[in-house]
Image 1 (cartoon, helix red, strand yellow):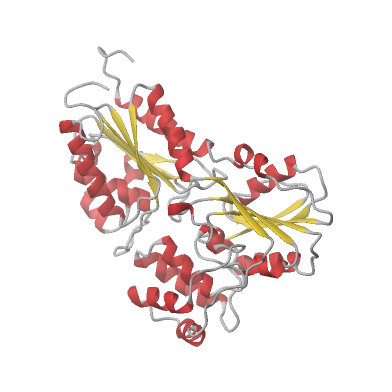
Image 2: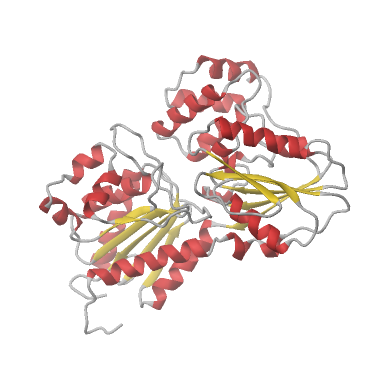
Amino acid sequence: MSSNSKPDVGFYRTVLREMFDAAIAAAQPALVLPQHLPSKPKGRTIVVGGGKASAAMARALEENWPHELSGCVVTRDGHEVACNRTEVLSASHPVPDERSVTAGKRMLELVSGLTEDDLVIALVSGGGSSLLSVPAEGLTLDDKQAVTRALLRSGAAISEMNIVRKQLSAIKGGKLAEAAYPARVVTLLISDVPGDDPSAIASGPTIPDASTPAKALEILERYGITEPASVIRHLQASEGGSGRAPSNADNAYTIIARPQASLEAAARIAEEHGITPVILGDALEGESRDLARELAEIARRTKATGETAAPPCALISGGETTVTVRGNGRGGRNVEFLLALAVELSGLEATYAIAGDTDGVDGAEEVAGAVIAPDTLTRAQEIGIDPRAFLENNDGHTFFERLGDQVVTGPTLTNVNDFRCIIVGGSGQPL
């Protein structure tokens, strides 16, 4: 790139989108799964699993497993991939439905009655908490749906949500692996959680649980969730115990794709365009608006003093933020982050950003995220929309839709959490 020329806004949008696409490509099951397959067992091989990437993982497994194989996985509507030896089910996300229960029961049925000569390969990725949903004894699907909706609106972190989910489930928190005993269980995971905690990915259906009913009660109390009463009674009745599923002793797991690797892939794209990448971390959490405020300050200091890196640079981060819903807009934690960031930056010269969910779905919308530029607020003003009003209504999707700044990928068939990048140019200097 010539230092005597100043690329137009389209150039920056292209770079940001290339970085996002590279992050997604680095976590594709066909790329990351084959080198992690277990040895062939003496007996049968059963595949089970759930998550937004599970169908693509199943196809990658089939293409690289020349031995006998049968089983079932469940994925989000629209994320299905045709498989020859694996049944692919679909269910609702982020709130479970009857199909989620059917899928969970099907998994438990498939692994029952196995022997120590048999092998279970569990394909687990983000989204599985909703897609594999078997209520614990005494609870109903309605109970679980109500709690899920309340937690989604409360601003609870995904790790907190999954603790509650495990304590209300007959399949999560290692219970699927326990049902498979004495068969060997090998779990292949695509991580979408901060810190890559295997027990938190899809609420760990094959990973022993370290949470407790008391901890789940504490979380519900923290966010003022007191209904349904049946859920509270269930947790109170279980409070004296650990709530932990017994461990299947012959149980191994491998995380085959991590958010950090995707951030590094995006960083390489920035370097190719002469932009210095700075990875701030793959596990940034907190309220979307709060993180926007923090990253805006880093961008301003970087622009003014080169504190983080001499501009031009790309501030790259991952992790999952939360949104405490106060309005009635269409939501989306990535678009909420970007809208808050645009307000905080207030048209800062030569500063551009993208944020999106690597699964292609930001919240409940079939939109991955959006982009902002120095003229975002000006263009909004020109068409008569108030960014602060949309932010207060938690309506980032509508705001960016009206500006034509949404990022739409369609189902990506993987899920390594959110991707964010802020490109910062020097004051008055071209990138």
